View (cartoon, rainbow, N blue to C red):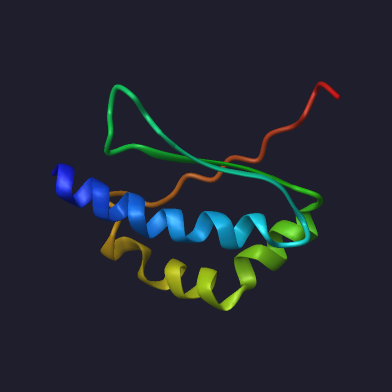
Amino acid sequence: CAQWEDELKRLFRAYVEASRAEPGCVQYHMLRDAADPSQFIFFEVWASREAFAEHTALPHMRAFSERRMDYLQRDFEVREIEMLSA
């Protein structure tokens, strides 16, 4: 399974720099659970909901979304969080 995890890490890493370069991106991090290396977490901060919507509508993001289950064991869980500190 480690080979599959490394391939997935390489695939996801390609999206990190492209996403960070988008004008509405404040932060974009790819994380991996230390206890379960098959668990990847993306921590993203966007300037607005509109900036996030623009991100998800980009051709490479739509293409990934359409074939995401070729790579994932279960679908993404997206959680919108509220920033309480400055």
